[in-house]
Length: 269
Picture: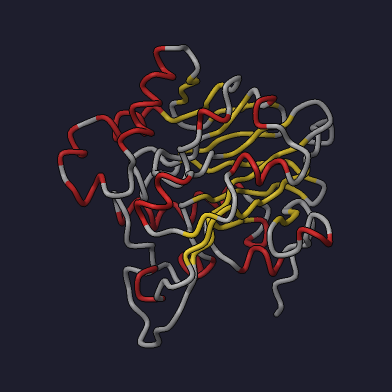
């Protein structure tokens, strides 16, 4: 481990859903309800000799179709920390839902790292059912088929090293092929949960988000996250606005928009 490179990790908020209710975010509803907004992130992993992006978010088409507030495109969000999406060579796609796998046209030189099971899921028999395909955008899925034919998709069957100090780990549950990302940082091993836990409370209360392929596997997924992270404070949920409150801002100007996940969070309120 001592010889592994360390990386900076940035969480970049690009869209929000302010009017979401708490009851919409948990299978087991709490008696207390109220507003529980949803933030949408892409992530950048920056090292001395490489930058890897995690997920590509969505753009204006899906924002309009689904009533989401697009603050900026993922490409523009990355530009706020000096990253040109055209320069990115590797993108990890945690899963193929619309808010994680759109705007790939803004990454024309990238190879995409995806689980075998996720492509099988997004293009197979389960998509006959509206409730299963609701969170997928058909144009994004078709684009990924094109990327396969263009030899731009690197498939993984379970756990895999993407680069020294960066690996993907199969989780499943939320979708058939969901994967999380493990990153070696100056504070230890950080795990980007993506939608293995949308909010901190999904994991802490063992109450999954209601968009789910396999409930039991999603519950087991919380153990997977803990297996690969140094502690619960090293696990970063995929959509929780608390991420931007707990972690230091990338710069004072980007407070509330871009956070440094490789730095120690303040989670004591």
